[in-house]
Image (cartoon, rainbow, N blue to C red):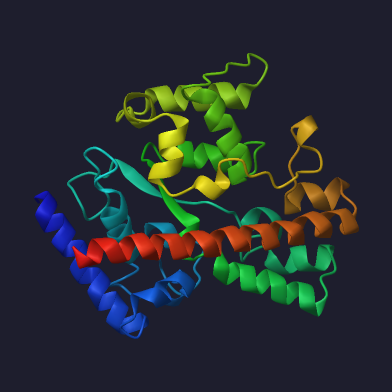
Length: 281
């Protein structure tokens, strides 16, 4: 498949999606929650039913079409599922939901453990839809499912928080290249970056270009003010239920929602603006 054929494929799927879900108006993409395509084989292509635990909005057919249009000129030799014989990049979600509020399996127990009020449940539920907007998706180099940058980000003490991931990524890339022997997570991230077969970060990017290529400028200095970051401890619904005061948890969790929602909405608008330029060409 040539680059022109890939672009044509992506544009056709986006046009179809625009007519089916956005009332023919690409502007509506900024407020669209990709939960609404779960189970649709044309646009989803990966889940096993609505709101299934295996659903990943950032890896759906339509999001990969949008990703290809946005990033194919920024990432050398970009291939995604459906846009090349093998995928060298895969989707990732910026701001996590499950860390603080639990996947579907744990949602009710988290709600009960922290005694959510009706208004707090509404805030959580609103964010559940918001975190599946286009402004909360980007790409990382694909790798072994159990030992990729994406997987590692969510399975260590950083608890999938994007600000903590970015802080460590910045230390690992030019021009910083900091190395702390006592920090095993930072060391492992650096190994994963160096072992990436595409050498994306080291051959093609420094931290600044990574930020600009993925329209992440609002995140470059973001800090969610983690209460115990100095102890390398980051809140999650598992750890909080064991050692954190309910009031302290709620203050952080709903402050996180407010900040993440603003960032997601702003970046969604930015991506739609960039997408409109591509469609016109």
